[in-house]
Amino acid sequence: MTLLAYGFSGLVLALSLGSATPEQAVFVASSFGVVLAAFGVVGSYDELMGRPKENAWLATLPATERQHYAARLLGIAAYVGLMAISVAVPVAVRLGLGFGVSSGVQVGVLVGIGVMWTAALSLALMWAISLALPPRIARPALTAARTILIATLVLGYQWIGAEPEAASAPWWPAAWLSDAMAGRSTLGLAMLVGATGALIVAFATAFPRRYFTLLDRIADGTRWAEDSGKGQNTLTWPERVAVRGAPARAAYGFALAAITRDRIVRGRLWPAALLPLGFAVFGWLGGGLESLFIHGAENALALEETQLHLSLLVILLFCAQTLVQAVQVSDHDQASWVFDTLPDARPRRLQLGAQQALTFRVLLPLHALLAATLALQMPALDACVHALFWFSVTAVTTRVYSLFQRSTPFSRRSDRFSIAARFIPLLASVPTGLAALLIQTFAFTSPVRAIFVSLVILAVNALLARVVTGPPHHSAPEVPRMVVRPSRPVAVAG
Image (cartoon, rainbow, N blue to C red; front, side, top):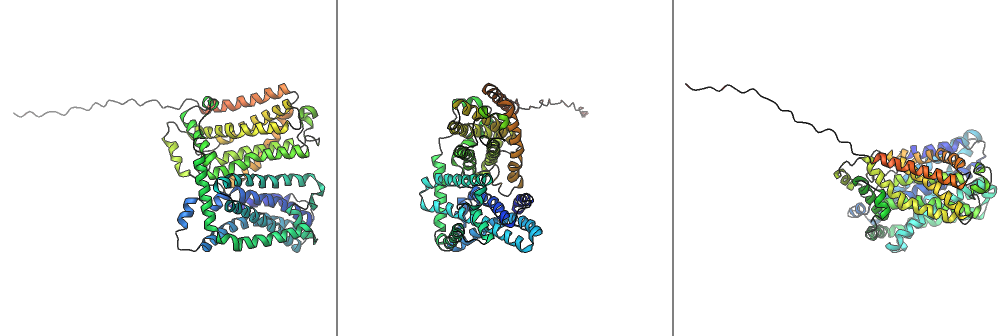
């Protein structure tokens, strides 16, 4: 499954290289591989490390700490290796057909090295934070590190596509691999070699001696997160008004608890939720997210001042779908049977409750922060209208996507190996973003019209909820039929 899932990305990447030279192909493919590896390891870190209860049971087996460590590292290495092969092989074949087998092999090896190096660095950073900080600090620090790492790589990927001098950027790992392909001795290449040596030493000597300590820290962090999250799932007055029906409220409360206490949900949800905010900050620093009311919505892609609006829409829609996927999995998936005890607990009603929790507790604060960020580069009213439109689009996207889920929320253990879970957000975000941009172009001729269109989208969103929470389907009660049985003749004794 992993090979097929990532292989599809590698195939699309190879076909998009066109007439690129081997050096250019290494840079482009390695840039893609670096971001993919960071998402693969950082986004799946909790699954890669296993459940604390299972780790505690495994520690009782007759094996040394180093043997346990080697088994864990081998499993992670197999996952990363499949990821590297899936990306590197299609690119190598594509370059081999155009420039010879030798060039293809070199390109494939360098791309694979980039994927494995990024995965190793990401894993080492996660482990170092877990070991160095106390649990109550390590849990939020891990979330922040995940977000910063992914945001840095994604924003760097955006930057290299916009700046022609990015191929020689001294801080971008793909540029170092491009130097290796060209045979240039640069500071970046020296940093790559030095960092590789440091990672080998860390994984061979430092981490094996502290593996059980690492598992204890992860378990302590999980317990602390569960204890600290208690009492945070009380519904506010607007939430009590909006969330109706026992099934939806049950899923809503479960989602609030998972957002604050479930390690798998937290690890997936917050990095994805904060990614659009990081991109908005990038747009503020580099330009490209200025007001469409000033420059004209029809010029969103043509002008440098507004060219990042489509990219932010795509990232928001990718984020929206990722959030819905995050509430499908749980560290306590075996407890999802409680939903079956509710009257009329259809999966869609439960999905609606979980989606409403995402809307109130994640999307609403996120778009308030987006409005504040946009206000740094455009009038405050324009910033609020832009954020309102984005909120309406992401809210209806999460609702539609959640209603397509056939099972109850929090009922799956992991979707790390699901092809659909990996690529539906990737494939759907770009065309959906283009459609949203067309609606935005139509709406943003004036602030009043933009507000009206946003409210219409929110009304459609509310209508979907009303359809789902309609009256339960009761079948007509069965009327018992009276069966008249003929009486038997009674024999009279004479």
